[in-house]
Amino acid sequence: MTVILTLETTCDETAAAAVTDTLEVLGSVVASQDSLHRKFGGVVPEIASRAHLENILPVIDETLRRANITLADIDAVAVANQPGLAGSLLVGLMAAKTLALVLQKPLIAVNHLQAHIYACKVAFRIDPFPCIGLIVSGGHSSLYRCCGAIDFTLLGGTIDDAAGEAFDKTAVMLGLPYPGGPSIQKAAETGNPKKYAFPRPLLNENRLAFSFSGLKTAVRYHLFGPGESKGERVNLPLLPQEIADVAASFQEAAVDCLVGKSLQALKETNLHTLCVGGGVAANARFRQKLETAVREKGYRLFMAPPSLCTDNAVMGAIAVERYNAGLFEPLDLDAAVR
Ligand code: KG4
Ligand code: ZN
Image (tube, rainbow, N blue to C red; front, side, top):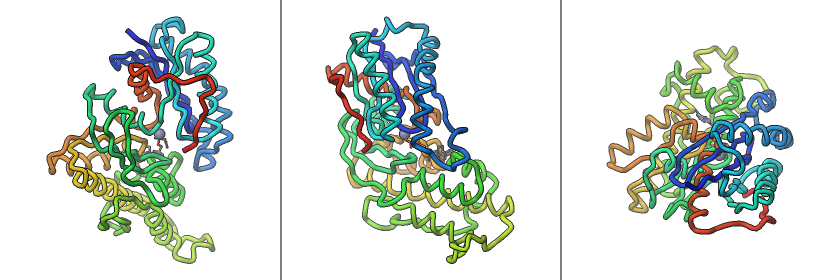
């Protein structure tokens, strides 16, 4: 049995996992920094990297404890070295390099985006490739042709904001707590998704791309009016039912775009399998609508459980593919923000 220790510090979660070559998860820990970033309404990069520094060693220790192994049982060390926030990436990278050097074990690089799709393989223990991969997170909204676990070609992505960013910023406008995605989902539960016809940018255009900034602006104008610079809400007070209706209508529009473009990608490429990853893939309404739409068309859909959609180190099990192919990195491996 081969055991790989995987580290993930691309954004604001400090995570580690011990996984085997048969994709068994021996232990996994995710230390969230949500409470640190909440008052700023978004991730503050400097705070994130400092928190990673404090968290990384306890997170590794706890992962080994849960897996009931020691460092001596590790056969390789893997780390997500791209894309992400520079300072955050460097903490995981330096920890991984140090472990690889001290233990004299190979170092493996993990692409965070490919890992988000690989979470589907880990969750279902089925090889989903070739497939369309949709990655929807705080930093990305992209569709890929995935010929293999580490063989991705970009088909299209957002021309402005990422979907998660739009959820987070809309939540701020509605006075909902960070992180915005789960808050919008919760508020939307009691809202009417048809109350407001917010735009679905690019949905009816041939272009395989997303755009979420116009949707976000439509919510802003709805709440503040076009003269929002005065900072005065048009429809004060913002009653709980209005918050719920705006959240539900926004969520419905965002979900329609994600579902529509995923189906378009499947149709255009003649591929029959869709894998979805990234924090926004944890959204209950998105999962429900995507499942219905994909089933109707007879495609295969793999969506990891919500805990494997948001950032985690289990998805770093993609390192198994590189381990088996002998794709190891020198100790001067760098981080790449894109
Ligand atoms: O993949 P992820 O954990 O980190 C990045 O790589 O960006 O994604 C984080 C994003 C945030 O924007 C967060 O608001 C969003 O995923 N998110 C959600 C939900 N859970 C997390 N968006 C909508 N609904 C959710 N339930
Ligand atoms: Zn992510």
